[in-house]
Image (cartoon, rainbow, N blue to C red):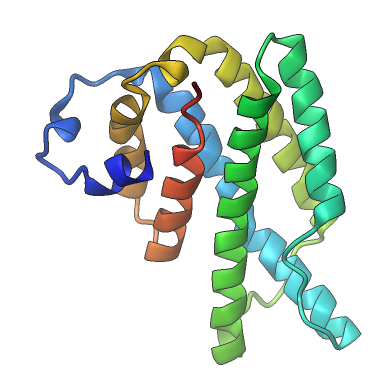
Length: 184
């Protein structure tokens, strides 16, 4: 799946598919969720700096809470738990790609760090809302997302988001997150 997204350059067969807006919304939600990674990284960096430690990117307790809540929500919509886990594992790992990249950047260029990092408590409601909307879209677009041509169908909306001026770090993370959407 990720290879399909990465190899589909402008003008390729996948890029010239008829525009299919069916998956635009879920890709938009994945991008919106990923956009929180900068704020999460900044909050973790600020907290670690205050405490004299290293920012902890992994948060197994919070991740387990997300998996459990989304599995319950997915079950209410008749979605397989394994697919829900796959999708949210992809979202969480993509977010961590950005967080790790930013933390590394800030180690070498502290001036690049945001001057006023947000509080994680202000970011979590956004993530929680988007998570619910992603599950709703999985239920709504199940046929498209479990079809044999899912990866091909995701290429146009993913490239639409990629062309919106994201840097390479955020582009790689978006591809990772989108690759997790296709179920079996």
